[in-house]
Length: 212
Image 1 (spheres, rainbow, N blue to C red):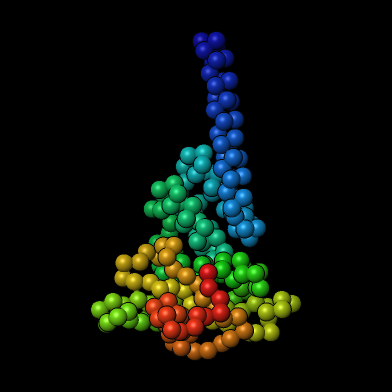
Image 2: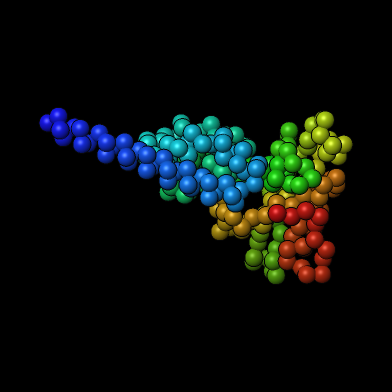
């Protein structure tokens, strides 16, 4: 019995070492492709990622703080998606508005000129548009955001951010939605969404200043 335990213990240690090495290699490969801001967001959700990678028990309560945080919400869902555990994502954060809010904030933080997460993001409204005819309907989620002093963008005050287009078939965290924001401009939501819509579906309209 003792010899059996002696053999079994090194095997467990070896498995743990191999698992750790695989995790490190995956992180290194991902880090080469990710921006510094994305790496910083990943650091926030690393405890959750580690539990998923180790196949530990993950509960809704484990996921909730990361889903509630607008900074990590989008990455949290995408991480759960990789492990086929999106059923653990809280339903109250599985909406287009919640997904779009996080995507907008992450876009602003990754933006070369802004390079910081907004201090405030407020949802304004959904704007509906038509493609070709009134049969094909798409919509955009419109927010306003601002960055506080001493950041140089504070002088712009509130700025609009448009996320979309969405369709009836869209899922909240689909990768097909883009973020648009004209830095330093503040028009009315319907007009901003119209400009975005025309830039996507009409070739003869000049595109908004910023797109991701």
